Image 1: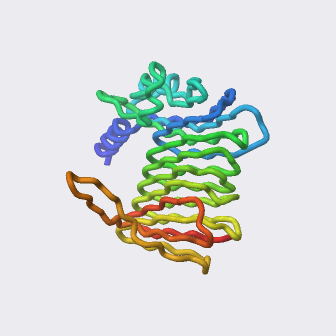
Image 2: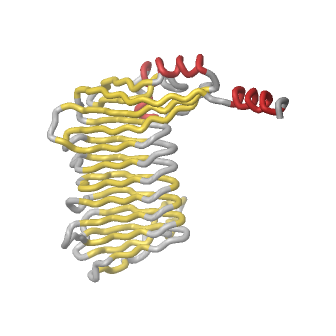
Image 3: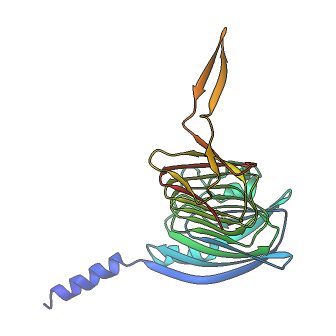
Length: 280
């Protein structure tokens, strides 16, 4: 036993990782659009009666040793940048962050991808933002977190990969997409248009009493449901293409429904999951 114990202690010491958690906050002037690309962690947005944006975030850092951890503590922080009518909030000190500082084209790419990434630490940032009620939002995250927005009347484009998307008291969600997770949206008024997608999950849409709309639905293994009795299925959508001297018509796999008098168009798609359009 005397020989085994020192060996076990040595193994535990060599396998240990340095870990650090703290909370930070920053206040930034608002612009028409808030653009926030997260990678690991959740994003929560709450509307308030305010003229600036308050960002609170919790950092969780893991590194193989204390030297690397200390370096990450001093460099992995949120930074901001104004580009035209957009305020960009991005994570500095990680692989790929340089492109946010050096080019405005990065906003259009909507991706953290870059070559030769070799971060020796792991990080997770859970963010909570308090914004003006009319703020336009472009939010995204990839792993270990959901996106949640409450009370924002501005235009929203929301993107996740491994997590859900939830919006309460929405007015204008033009896009909500995730791969693994549900998409849940409660509208204060009927949207004119929007695109909603999940690969593995359900799409739940709650609309005001008496709403009218149209919706297209496409799924490999799912169905669309509504609790509104006044609904009808429209003829299958076709695409007309001119080919040489002839014309071809290609049938789409989408199902189109009209609820009550119709109106805007909601584009809904799942792969493994159902879609629900409910009247409050």
